[in-house]
Length: 295
Ligand SMILES: [Zn+2]
Ligand SMILES: [Zn+2]
Image 1 (cartoon, rainbow, N blue to C red):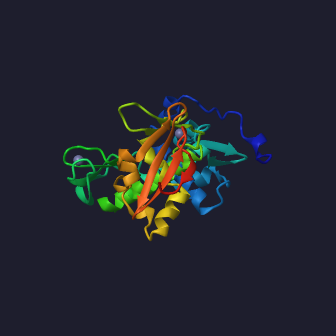
Image 2 (spheres, rainbow, N blue to C red):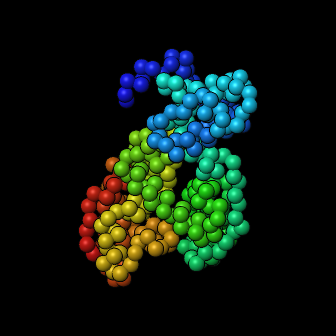
Image 3 (cartoon, rainbow, N blue to C red):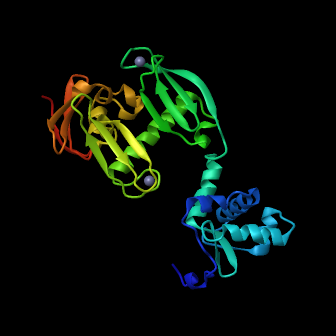
């Protein structure tokens, strides 16, 4: 930071109580102010501030007193005053991005659509739905195949198969970030684990202590972002990412999982393409620690 820090006025009081913080967004004029600041940041360098009169003109409010009141309510958490100008804080910029993504405003629903895929439990067609930001794939018998959140901006003009593709992409990116140790939602550090129950197939889990984001899936998800597995598919002329995630045998087929150590958990997962099998060894955190060629 520059010496600007010294001149941030001391009446900036940020609230750490989320109810107070979001309460500050209760008036539409305040949301307009955030959007105007966001527009200004897009037009200029992010760090640049805008003066009171210019900002009021952009928002289009006649009454300076009313404008000042609402701007003051945003100070601290979402807007900061530096020298004689205003700019968004990190949280303010995130709120503007979320508003633009339609996270809080759009409710987009798509009619259920059959995909070119069958349920691996009952062979009925896989059916995708999209509602309240959730892309869900299941079958007529309600066998859950896959689900992931997709922002309304990505879904608005897309068909359901396209939304499913975005969901698959986000799932792979989410796995990659999680295995790198960062929450895919808020980038707080996150720990992952493989849990094994005698009667169920092993599950990969991660939950962010900071934002509560959760990632749960078959432990085969850990191989989705593994370079060696992708290369193995490529060597056979296939692209790992062209398949629906739930269609991949190493994800859906429990018989491919072999628990070789209970505590800490360590298991082998067989990945087969054509007649060749690659065995990946996954540790208790979901990281691939070894490979063996075909048995
Ligand atoms: Zn089914
Ligand atoms: Zn998080």
